[in-house]
Length: 85
Image 1: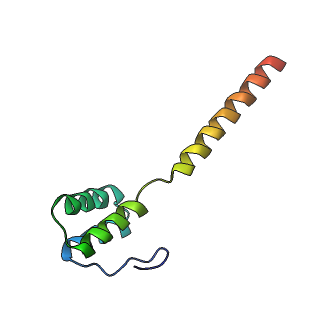
Image 2: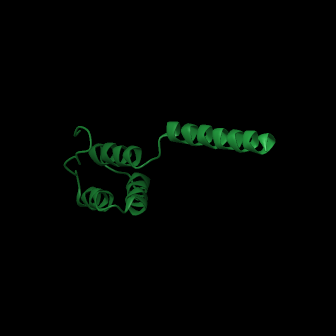
Image 3: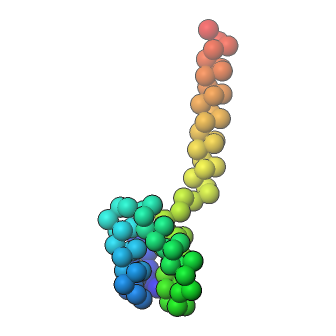
C-alpha cells in the first residue's frame, strides 16, 4: 500500500476509476463505486484497495467529538452572556 496521501497503484480498471473520482474531489461517487466493488466478489487486491478508499474517504469519529465540544462551549458562552446582562 502507498503511504500517506499517495494513491496506490489500482489493481483493476474499476478501482482505477474509483481512485480517480476520489482524487478529483468526487468522494461520494468514489465511495459508491468502492461499495459496488465490495458487493461483487472482488479479488483480494481490489477488496483491500476498496476498503482503503472507504477508510480514507470517511469522516474521523474524533471530528464529531470536537464538533460537539465546540457546540457545548458555544451554548455555555451564550448562556453566561445572557445571564450577565
